[in-house]
Image (tube, rainbow, N blue to C red; front, side, top):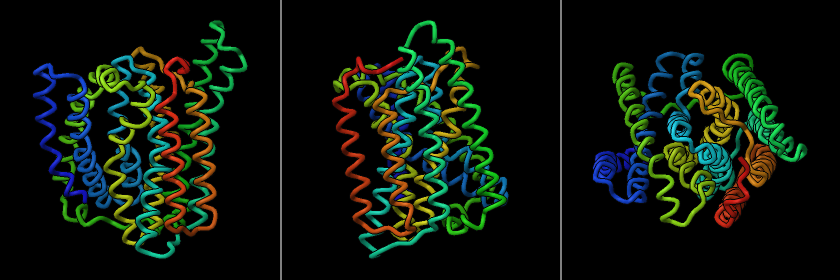
Amino acid sequence: MEHGLDALLVFVPIAVILHYAHAPGFWVFAASGVAIVPLAGWMGRATEALAEKLGAGIGGLLNATFGNAAEMIIAVQGLRAGLTEVVKASLTGSILGNILLVLGLSILGGGLKHKSQKFNSTAATMSATMMALSAIGLMVPAVFHLVTGGQLAQARAEANLSLEISIVLFATYILSLIFTLRTHKDLYLGTSHPHDEAVAMSPKAAALILVVATGLVAWMSELLVSAVEPASQALGLTEVFVGVILVAIVGNAAEHSTAVLVALKNQMDLAFHIAVGSSMQIALFVAPALVFLSYAIGRPMNLLFTSFEVVTVGLAVLIVSLVAVDGESNWMEGVLLLAVYLIFAIAFFFLPPHLVIS
């Protein structure tokens, strides 16, 4: 399936031609979004190949750093363009997309092929607990904003609050790497199933592919971000919906296919780790890193999400915790996760733009 995505590489030159031909924003947005999907897949394969050669410790750090590189690059381009709300919405969308859509499709696909699938409940519960911490980190700035009435005088305090929460989340992420890669790595042994593509790739080829793919993703992301506003207007969609659903799906598409494929092979440990682990990286690594970067480029971003985004993330974490607790899954649990994701997507579609807090 991942190699099948390579046919979409044709959209890289198409997106460039459309952009410089000043085509309607919708077509530039669509072409650049589709182009990012196979490029993100190649970044993932190259990262896995390097990780296998460099050993578990450095390899795990490399996977953690580049695992969400496509989302990170899209977000940085969004910050540079001043689309802070789209960036924050894409973070919410990546979290919801991974723990509901990706995990739901994985459990459904695997469950249809295997009556029930087992995974390490201790590791899964720990991941779900860390996602709960992430939800708290996203919730507190919104609660603070509501309690203080969003007064202008409190704007500085809100900015400081977001920055300091980012430091706590980032420190927790570093400690989680130590937990998963060193002190309790036995809990995650079930997730070490190398891909054939990674094994067949030399370190030099992997490094070259990683550099080229990262550069192309950065270019496509710039085109994508430049077309967000005209595409939103053409489709009649709010920027929050575009960020939560469309941009998030584009950034995570390669992981979607990988998680479903390994679930079909009855490697539910790995599928769970890809889906929940990716969400955890978004909340504990990507979000704080973007806050730090936003200060560096002179466009400070806070962690003040809409009340609706906070509620959806909290409910998503709750239902995933219920799925993880028994260490076993079946296809019906996949249906439940997908149903929750569809309900949230429908609600985001109808969410009025004036309800977005900034």
